[in-house]
Length: 288
Image (spheres, one colour):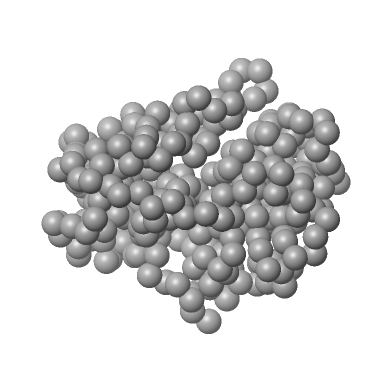
């Protein structure tokens, strides 16, 4: 079995060959969730990590400071279109550019920005295995500051790629939508505490952890047939729409990206995810 949409995923060999092409824009999308000292989580930019080492020529896409709504109550929320377009233009991503996204962890930060770009009408690429696989293969990294010439990013908002709590709540009573949790099994079951408020999961949601999508050694995605089986086991292939959730829309974007590779055509990310849901006692949750 092959991916239905393999064009969104590029390999390290391909990037090494095309790294100096004039239209390539390589973006390190690394960010971090850090403990806030009170049992919760704070967002931390990955710019310092990028400065220490990155794929030669890569710029840094700053999710925390540039690509999140600074007025929102929750982390990582989609920014206003003008803010997003301004940031991407400054990164050199615009018409005619081929943007290749990666991060230094498990790929979820890169897929978050990939999903955001898709929601604004721009198809980018994910580097399979990210910086981890690049370094594992002995490829060069750089510490020099890297920028691309400014561009003009024309945002074309595409509806339906993000969901809110109203849609998720309505979906819980429908057999036509699968609410899919991308957090770990421990977090899904509620046995690991409540980093986002109440422990547990959205009632009746199912679980495909984003970490299970990857080869643990290379961080590359598992073969298409294995990934397809993971989602089929929880019934995602038997509904009309899938809404992915996690803590703040990051791991959820990884599940959403893989579903897109596999050919699922009606997928959305719940933007505020458990950061919003678990904090609202009126919204139904389950444990165990």
